[in-house]
Length: 70
View 1: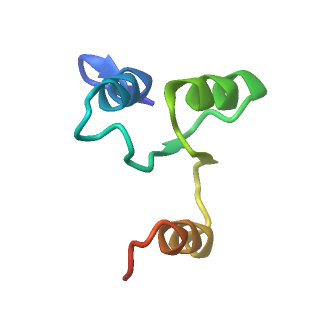
View 2: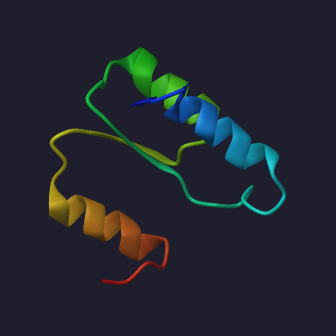
């Protein structure tokens, strides 16, 4: 969730604070997967927390569930 200048959690909080992006579906993709990491991403507004390496079929399934097609 590390990014230059801010974290993915910070980005999620900003997206949730904006009326234009408040309803966006957020999926965390991280190298960290402890219970605390998952809880933190959930609190930040992520719908799912996936740990690298991610199963591509799982990611495709999640994207299909939110209406994103190949």
